[in-house]
Length: 180
Picture 1 (cartoon, rainbow, N blue to C red):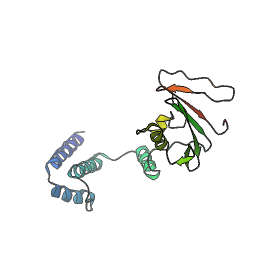
Picture 2: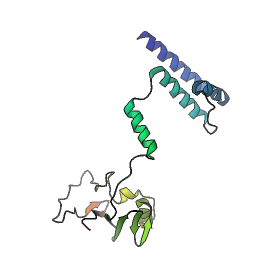
Picture 3: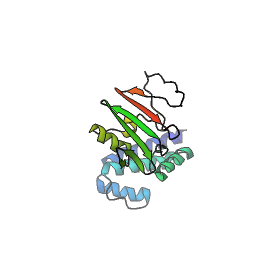
Picture 4: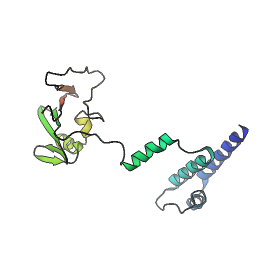
């Protein structure tokens, strides 16, 4: 236990010393710690932070398997999992008294005869401002309609649709391909 406290204090002192090093000295320290030349574009602050992280990792251990698996999945799949809406799904949003209907296609989203790569592009075209498309169309990450905390869930109608929901003064509805 005493050994670990001593090591922690030494690592803390080394990290504090890193903050006072000039850029050239940090680059030399990087070569010692990582065994290679540092990327040219890294700032002094980022070099120091990455060296500090590596020193702590070497002294106390790295990430657990679950965290490594999660990060690897993010790297392999380009970020957080994307929404999966089936082609044929129809999104309906009433905005400023006008109904906007978007149909999910295999290659994007169809709105007013034009295919868009994202819902955000459509939301921007409708509102004239930058909107998150999934938020504008009231979608959750899994593709289900989003409910506000004060909103009560609407019961399904006979045909299985949920009808329109009031959200920010506009109504939104979602139909799947089988309902359309």
